[in-house]
Amino acid sequence: MKNWKDAAVFKGKERGFDFSPDLSLLSPVPFSENAQYCIFPGFCDVHVHFREPGLSYKETIRTGTLAAARGGYTAVCTMPNLDPFPDTPEHLSVQTEIIARDAAVRVFPYGTITRGEAGKELSDMEALAPLVCAFSDDGKGVQDTEMMRAAMKKAASLGRIIAAHCEDDSLLRGGYIHDGEYARAHGHAGISPESEWRQIERDIALVRETGCAYHVCHISTKESVQLIRDAKAEGLDITCETGPHYLLLDDSMLEEDGRFKMNPPIRSAGDREALIEGLRDGTVDMIATDHAPHSAQEKAKGLKGSANGIVGLECAFPVLYTGLAETGVISLERLVELMAYAPRKRFGLPLDGDFCVWELGCRDRVDSGSFLSMGKATPFDGMEVHARCAAAVCGGKLVYQA
Ligand SMILES: [Zn+2]
Picture 1 (cartoon, rainbow, N blue to C red):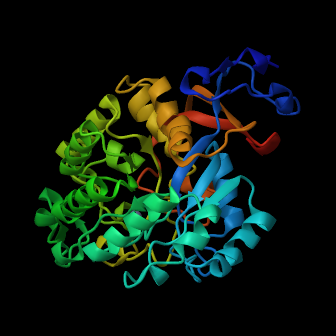
Picture 2 (tube, rainbow, N blue to C red; picture 1 turned 180 degrees about the horizontal axis):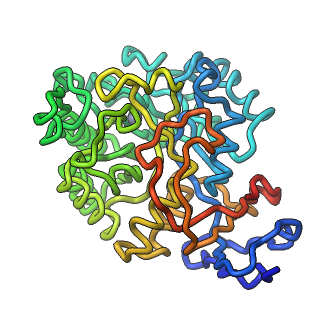
Picture 3 (cartoon, rainbow, N blue to C red; picture 1 turned 60 degrees about the vertical axis):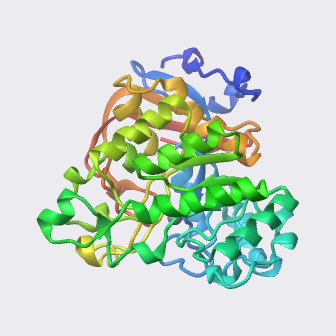
């Protein structure tokens, strides 16, 4: 038995976190002899859908948090497109009671920006503010500029973040995958990049006016990267996330399969390169999976008919390590910053006693059949990866071991 205490422990102090994992918690965990281990702060995903309450045939807080732990995540922020929508403290309490009972890792719920995410009137933002990590209408863009202006003013007065799913419905024109070469060659209706960046552009103007702390969800286009880069240079309080699939895939890799369908869609090679450049120069602040499970039936209708959304928690670090860090596109330190420190710093979330242990340099394959998540659809299924989670500890408790 190799002494796992020799494992490399990732440093965090210079990033403002006192990351000193209690390795005695790993004592009962068997580690294999010739493997190379690395210990990281527990990952933090600010964009997951756990579907409960309301859609627990897709995922539950129990299965979602078990999947998180298996992916090395010890903290997640749950998007509010639920039933009931967490738009009042009373509605939110339905979710927080399940979290208190079933969650295996830390779960921080979002509250909605508008009631029922209908875009017509603001949620009970004032009463929700102390109970939620931020506000979002994820799944939809807030179409009405006046509504977004009011939301940003309110959020600014409450000292809370607006995390925006940016999508201008008037520019969608029936599209469901990226409006690019693949869509044209295979007769699919495309979603223009403009539908995303136009709304980011609108919101940046509103941030300038209101002083709201603003976070853009799942950016996918090169124009979005440039708009956010410029806004940051101007000194506006703006951050953004992108997902593993936008960083590692482009539309030339699409297949006629629902596991390649999500919104925003997998974009062009040029967009992917711009996002990677954004990771390098700090424009893109963090990586979030947009873990969005659906039933097998809902994902079995090809690119056109399948529901939007893929799962991500259990393969994010393996695919990113293999595709970006091992290849030297970004450093391992930068990857851990994007997945653990930066999201916590922006959303003010704790790291007390949270860490994960990874075997690096091994040969493994993404196998969605083995996922603890109820959702199995991922475009990375079958991909060869060189990292495997050995254990995860959350708040001083062992929550996953291989
Ligand atoms: Zn979204």
